[in-house]
Length: 339
Image: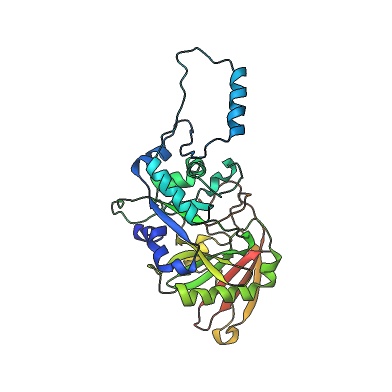
């Protein structure tokens, strides 16, 4: 994996080209002082709270103040968060333009690992303070800032980065309708269910239809149009069988391989069936089941950040179903889902 490939997966690098295929989004340059605030390891004091207190809240605060015995200790320090009024205004305007609720991310990653700290236990944000709370609590966001080119094999100097805040219109996505697709040399070689912590019966029942829809989407909209020939992309298949693009990810260990292993994906091992092209043309062939090796984190995956470390604690094993399909172009696709 090269640094150039990582750069090509930045949201702003691919969104203009594939805007019509994905969720409506806004991209805002991230000021340097906001980046410094997000990387500050000090006490978590959330900035950007722009919701004025209601009358009842003010009365409650006044009532509590009468009961509090304030300390006279001169060493007592009140922590206050920095304010970014101009940036906060731009963010709020963008959130409003996207319907009032958004899903935030940086150039590559979303704060998926910090959903637990939000009041709604979700990545759904309505204000800048909601975004700051998630970002300051996320290791994925910190890695975007500090190690964006981890696992890259080239020795060239790291490019100068311009960070951006990405705001995506909030959509209620069903985890069982998300899929990760692996592309090597501009050929779709593997499809995995995105949420490998659960069994979804409809995936097994609609396996051939799901595979067909995703392959048609890839051939029509993605193949030969992305900046690299090796990459990973995530899609969502809605109730009308329409496929939507969610994200692009580098083809390498920095991206979670889900129900595959990177050894399989890079070598082609276990990704080839026993049928000839003519025999299996446009036909689904059940091959075998085996033990899966997905990383289970025990939480829904609302969207697809790419900074997911394979091999983290909490790895689960479940039976997986492996299906092969040979397309009319002769491309072998391996689709894998939990049984």
